[in-house]
Image (tube, rainbow, N blue to C red; front, side, top):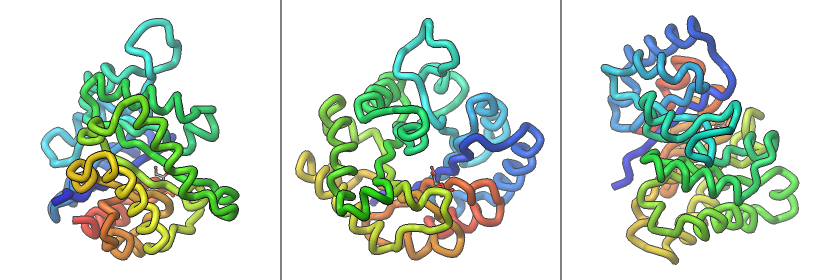
Length: 250
Ligand code: 13P
């Protein structure tokens, strides 16, 4: 009922030469062949060119971030309309690196979520706790608070056109993924929270797991009932790894 989704978040990696090699090999490997929807999230400056490279494929394009404002005096920023203009269908909002390195609080993330939908983009809303928060037993409170900020501004109905991603900060780029049970526990909590708002929407909401997903752990993570795919960082830069992850999701 929920189509699996895998998004490759390249973060601040790549070059025109590297990208064309990577994307040509990915397209040849047809990562969507087993049924998963597959997105590439390159840095802004490469979106247009990557979009051209995947034009004849089943791959789709996503931004990594956007500006909450629609246009105007925001030097250095990129709007949702611009992302649409270069072919994006999705955009990540509230990635933990945006929250921790660039000071985006829950309210700023909620504004970006609203801006994405205003421009017709599907936001991939990231939530997740830090190691200290997990060790203090605050995981549930943190992810529910992050979600609540968006619910308050955008409303539950908006999630019919959104994707959620659980990305525990301690698992990002560390090689230490959440266990399938740990992931499932938080995914089930998020879905139950959404079901309190609207059971039908919650049942169709895709919730991705992110944090050290690789070919070796993708299958068992994606086998969990409430894990609908992955938001993949490092492993999305490796053709064989990423193709295997997409196959595991399909
Ligand atoms: P890694 O897969 O490199 O841990 O990154 C996860 C992530 O942050 C994807 O958005």
